[in-house]
Amino acid sequence: MGAFEFDVRNDLCARNCCCSNEETNNGSGEVCIIAQKIFDQCRIQKCLTSDILGPARAASNALPNCNEMLCEGDIIVPPCNASDVTMKHLKLSRIEILRKTENTLQDGCWDVELKYVFDYTLEFRRADGCIIGCIDATNAYILRVTLFGDTESNVTTTNDLYPLGGNTSGGPYVIAEGKAIALGADLKYPCASYGCGCNSCCCGTNAGDVTMGAPVAVNVTIGLFTIVKMFRTVNMIVESLGRCVPETCTSIGNACDPCANFDSLAFPLDAFSPVTEPRSCCGYGTTYGSPNCQVTSHHDCGCSHDHSCGCSCNCNCGCNDCGCN
Image 1 (cartoon, rainbow, N blue to C red):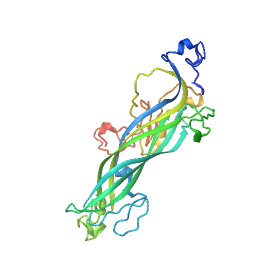
Image 2 (tube, rainbow, N blue to C red):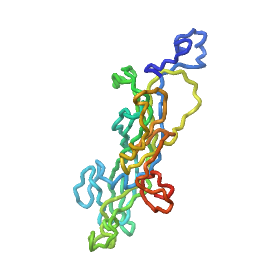
Image 3 (cartoon, rainbow, N blue to C red):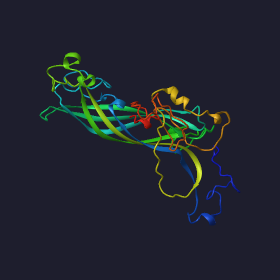
């Protein structure tokens, strides 16, 4: 619809706004409202491992361990005699909207980049179970999603309900909600990364486990539930049918090769002859997209579709025929 969301029928009078008193005294029936209409939305359930989050880092209020100077954002080095670590008091402290731009290939679609910041406490124990210290830690995760928000309307709005808001554009706007679940925390040892003996890659002899060396970092795993919505302010007549539940965001691309994602796209003919019908928006690579996004093809990262190929790429790009993980 247009920037002002007119409902073009026999009359342009908004119901219950300019009708007779006889029709409005009882307060029932259809009502004209200003609403934050959701144009697109989806939900994401993602397990964030250390491969995604990286090692635990010191929070702004973290206290140093073992008399070491520790600045915000530094990798946390556990006490040298720690044999176990527990993640406590996990909180999704904030969600930041880093970027919101129109998608150059899909008319009406918008690329959104969100930053999720997690705060928690790490508690370290010796082999005998005695607590030897704790520290406040943090990690961050960048989420990219592409959703339908319609074409930007050249309208400036203002109101006195939110006086600090000033003049704004017509949108679209983004709402992101999230919930974090602590799934686990582990000590990271230098030898574990190389699979070799202490003579060749590490290790102090005063460690809690001399076969692994002293721990050098902490790996955490966090479960993230999030819902992302794109909306605009519109005039509309409503009858509520209950709450709406977002469908699951799609993830169709792969991170193997950006050119592979581009080559799999259908030529954007609509960009040269625009249409206005609402549709689902596709996110490629590490970007999530609208539910039910239609994709024409996938790149297979060079994996053969022969059942005996035995390939093992981790890109979810059409290798299912040969059991790729």
